[in-house]
Length: 125
Image (cartoon, rainbow, N blue to C red; front, top):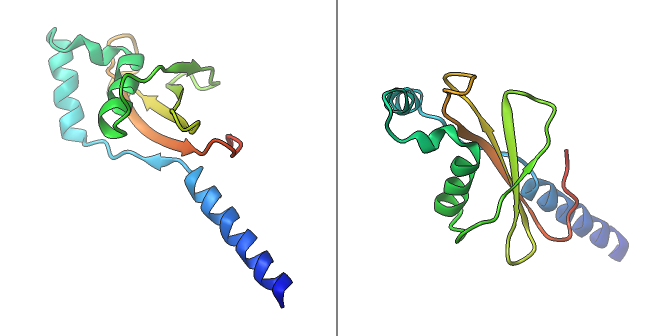
């Protein structure tokens, strides 16, 4: 009996860890993103052309991390960028960005998804 209870707890812990390691989708408002691209095309807010800037802004504002240090991670996909940062508690945050309107040097970047991995969890692919 005790053994079954322990196995059940381990399974529940594993499920929680898997849930914490999953990618969380970020809603992209099509109308808002088109307007932002239009503003950039007209010479305003050029920072949105820099994926590093967009990732840092997201981590700072949405995840409330002060002055994050981001590292770009190599990906096989040419149409996305991936950044990683380590938090003070040792957790890792990964941020995936895409170019939702134009897929060239004039296209703005937007966060598509992110995930937080606790310190002692392996980062899944």
